[in-house]
Length: 150
Image (cartoon, rainbow, N blue to C red; front, side, top):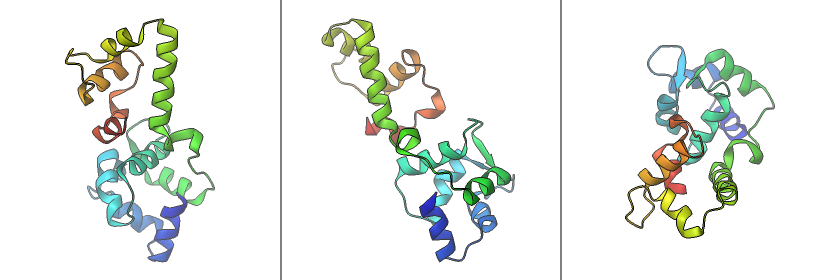
């Protein structure tokens, strides 16, 4: 959020204008898709960082952020910390390790659980299915960009 604030000040873009640049549909809400597509016009950042910032703003997991929420976050000192959203891949790996430890499976058997199609390769589809069914992730948390980072 700090980089976003600094960039908008440097470019003399009000928070209202920044919101409108990202929310192009006129609905009054930034969706995950409009955020991922529109924020790049204002600030260069990686896909995972974009996703993390949106998830931080969308703490209620409604998949939309209204102007009031956006403004409150931009004006606050709140920022995602390393322990919150920015180390998503690391958190997932830790959850997989925990699952493995609790499952009491051999390493080979644990691999087979994740390798859903049995082709001896862990594909994005394999990881997606495992994370949803075994670890309880929500579909909206598992973008292709995030899965590729694993």
